[in-house]
Each structure stands twice: as C-alpha cells, then as structure tokens.
Image 1 (spheres, helix red, strand yellow):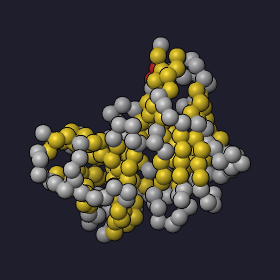
Image 2: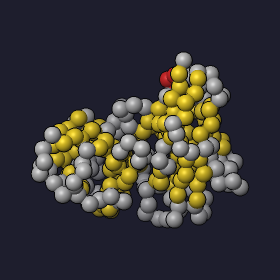
Image 3: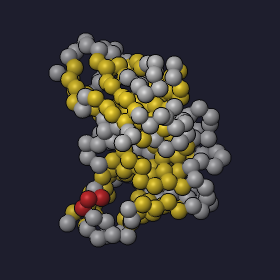
Image 4: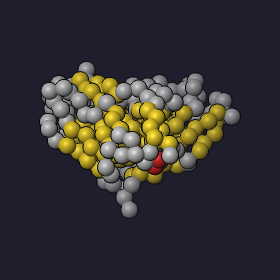
Length: 113
Length: 112
C-alpha cells in the first residue's frame, strides 16, 4: 500500500544553517504531497503542498519539489531560525478511494542560537 | 474566523471511566478525523468520517467510539476498554477525504 518515509530525527542545527528533511514515498498513481508543521503543544498546520510532478511548493522560506523519478519530496530551507524548531510531517493523498491522508512519522527539528 | 475547536485542552480520567472529547468545525468540511499522537510515534488514525451519519475505523479504533450526527461535530469517546488512553488527541477536517486537512489544537488526556 501507499506509504511515506521520513528521515529520523532529531535534527539539530545552529541558527542560519541550511535545512534538509528527507521524505520519500511509495504510491500508485499520482498522489498530492504535503508538508505539515507542528509547534509544541499545538495541532498541525499545512506548510506547503504540491499536486503534480515537478511542482515546487513554498511557504515561509521553506521549499519542496515533487520529484516523481526519485519518489521524493524533500523539505529545504536556506537559513533556519530558532522559531523554526518544531516537528515536521510529510504526507501524501492515498491512491485508493475512500482513504485519508497518509502521514510520515515526523521529524523533530531543534534550532539553537 | 473559520477553524476547528477542540475542547477541553487538558482532560483527566479516572480508571474505568468513559470520557468524550469534543471537536467542532465551521469550515463546512465533509470529512473529519481523529488521531492519537504518542511521543516518537507520529500520528495514528483512530476514526474518520466522510459524511454525516457515516464513519470508518482507522488503524487503532479499539477502545474508542465516535458519532457524526451533525456536519460540524465529530466527538470521540475514549472508553474504559482503552487500556492506555494517555496521549495527545488531534481532530482534523478536510473538504473531502484526500484533500489537505485542517487541525485543531489538540486535547491532552491523562489518567489520574
């Protein structure tokens, strides 16, 4: 069945460092792909999305490109801030009718000043 | 502002008690979901509903029950059959099943 695999964390960076969080997926058909962010004690917020191959989603300095040839949707940011410390979830829309989004296990990012 | 409201933010349960977590949305979404989140385990789907008066079990439905009598509301009952209910519970909604989900701020349930 469809699945999402994220790199395990925690990821620990200094402020202004470059961020990459890897996400790969397995799916039949052409799923839409999403990144969500969860700040401490809160629910998840949609960060960005891409609906077809080669689409680039972007928001708040974060970017991710839908790569069908490598089945990947890696999250990147050129210069992280302390306020980016959160848990990041990759997700896809399942190819089977009547299924909910499929989430990865989440990657914790900790940024220090 | 449209959104999802979960209440209460913190909830305590005694052994053997059922408790109900509230979830209300004013986004006019058809689909609603309940997830459980434990440290290091990501999100696990408990129940979901595509439309009023219909709901489906997710991956970990045992010990939980839901109802969907109104489009806006999708309450979750944690029954005494759920042996390890301490967790962070998240409710979400979307226009349809495979579309981006909007999340509430969660309810943290603890056992006294």
